[in-house]
Image (cartoon, rainbow, N blue to C red):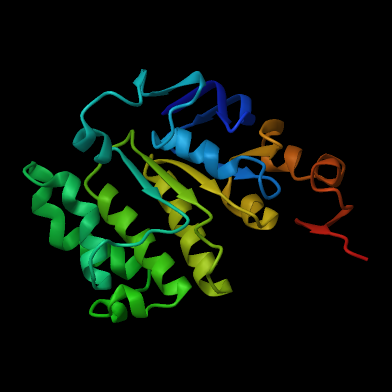
Length: 253
């Protein structure tokens, strides 16, 4: 479980986040939504330990997130960033294999080959195994990095966490569904999942809890049915919304 309390991040004289509380719980999916610049990716980076907040604290299973053994943390927390570029030319399979580095020298290393193959199959990239990452489309690269995160957590015992930053942004409809179902499957295994999304209906599908951010602050936090409502969303996004069945739609006319 990741618990963030009173999070504030200040850069260049401006608060990117202020007064944020949230919990990423085992077996549940937390979706972070909000307009561009609302602080979603910054908050995910705080939850991962990549950014140290100027205010507040982040604890993983009761202990400070930072300051411990890096390999131990990597065995319990995987991150898929918006973009990741390798310093050296790598194939898709080699990129996925990077997720197993945390298990080097541990009993979990016995799972390496099976974990890599299973992750590539789940992300639908087995046919890309020999392709250079530089030759992949944006969606293919995103699925490869998702597979890397899956491989990293394959040997992890709950509690463990998966943090995803806009993982569906470059995916087609079929692969969006595949990735979101995989995230739900990880939660069913007891993994704590936090995911940054722009598509509010994807959040409705995948999330148990939704945190709606607006200009670095929490505008709403709760179950999807209590947050993804026209009267909650309109003042944040600045456009009207309609509820149509189980979907919520922005009105552009």
